[in-house]
Amino acid sequence: MLRESATVQNVDIDVIAVVRDDADPLVLFGCELRAFADAIALLDPDELALARAELVAIAGDDVAAQAAAVCGYFAAMNRLLDATGVPMAAAFDMSAALGLTTPDHLQATDA
Image (cartoon, one colour):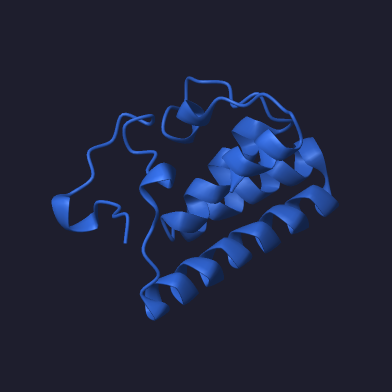
């Protein structure tokens, strides 16, 4: 979603920053947003409290609320797509770009 949004808005981003803390996402409040999203994804309540407090301190309540809403929306969309069996198009497989290895059973298909 971030990559597509950046493309539509003609904004430069560095998607490798999703998996590398030493990379600058090139997004306003990007490092704080990454820490917040990581804490949510990892279900770490202590880390989430710290990341939320840092995001609020740097970006404000409105940005933190919007970030939480985006995380919730993303989780809901993933569940919906998983539940309905919608295949992920090969064009959206970013594993190689992020330096990740995707298990064979999770590889994108052209179906």
